[in-house]
Each structure stands twice: as C-alpha cells, then as structure tokens.
Image (cartoon, rainbow over all chains, first blue to last red; front, side, top):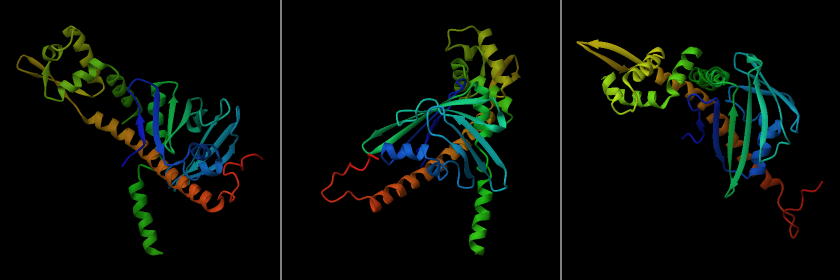
Length: 159
Length: 127
C-alpha cells in the first residue's frame, strides 16, 4: 500500500509530498536533519548515500552523494535557510548534474496522536525544471530494479 | 518520453477546458460542434484547444465524410503516469526505510533509556 502522497499539478512548478510516520515529531525531525540517520533511509536501497558535509543550522550548507550499483555517482547540495526546526526545515536543493536549477524545499512536521505528518513542498524555478527533476533526477537505480532484484536473488541463492 | 514532449503534454493538460475536452473524448470520437456544446466558448476557440492537444499527441483528427472527428490518444497520458510512478517509487522506498529506522530508534530508546525509578521522566534534556 502506498502511503506516500505526491501531488504534481500540471502547469504549476511545485511538488507536494505528504507522509505520516508512526513516531514522535522530535524523532522524525532528527531523522531528517542528523546526517548519520539521513544516510540510512534517503533513496532506494540500491543507492548508497554518503555525506560530504552537513551543517544543520541557519545558513549551513550540505552536500551528499548517491552512488548506484554500477558506480555512477550523483551529487546534490544546498543551503539551510532559517534555523531548521520541526516547524519548518527550509532549504535549497540542487542536483549537480543540472547546476543553476535550484528548488526551494519547505518541510513541516505536525504531530497528532503520537504520529507525525511530514509535508514537503518543493518549489521549482519552472514547470520544465519540475518535470525534468521528476523524469530524470530521482529515477536512477529504480527503473531497472526488477533486474537488480533478480541479480540479488541469484547472489543470495549462490551464497 | 522526451522532456520537451512531456512539457507539451503538461502544458496541454494545464487548461481546464482542454481537460474537459479529453474527458469528453474518453467516451468516444466527437466533432468540434459536439465538443463546443457544453462550453460557453466558440467553435474556433475549441479548435485552438484541439490544435494544442493534437500537438501534444493527446488527440488525433480524422475526416469521415464531411465530419472532422477528434479522437483521444491515451498513450502520452499513460507515459505521464509512468513518469510520476518512478518518482513515487523513489519516495515510497525511502519512506519505508524511514519507517524501519524510526521503529529501530524507538526500540533502542526503550532499551537504553528507561526513566530513572522515581526520577522525573522528562529530566535528561539539559546538558
């Protein structure tokens, strides 16, 4: 069951992602801002995330790299705007393969009944940027996951 | 689908009249007059919308006797759905991993950090 709701309206350069997590708000906030935790979940399992720098503070910069099974590496970087807090994590986000195409992300965390709803609004510079981001920016390692699953199963059976 | 083709499809879908035209065409072929009937816009205006839809590959037009019929081409719409599905999978899998991580962190907190007996349970936050 897909619990992650993604809204991408035609003609509007925005993506809104909402997801509820069964954990208190402070912990969900930590998982989003502590680099040691972030690398453990951001991206599909077949991408390895490594942190180059991560300064969780107003004006702090961050950069991480994602490496796929073939060894292709993709860099992303950005800047925090305002002190990151559960009420708002505001940051720029830029894929290094498309320098100058910057997206502004605002994540808000709302706790209700011990669960936390995370709502992330990404505002792009243009609809074309938004579409390109969705089309190419984050599909790596996912499109041929069926093939990789087969390889993994073969490896598991061999060992 | 090439990125600019995708832009054409999104551009075409950005207009409510064009979306309504596609919805109508999903029921079957129609003439410009039939398409214009539910709207308070002229037939030339509908024709302009059809040109945009045709350019995006969402509509094809055929001539049958004297009537010019428009037909829905669903292929690009299916590709748009696939386009979002990949992005959806990226976040679905990330968020499932985050679910697991949050569960593990909470289990570790329960194992390692039980409140001091008789102490105040919220008291360990000042450094």
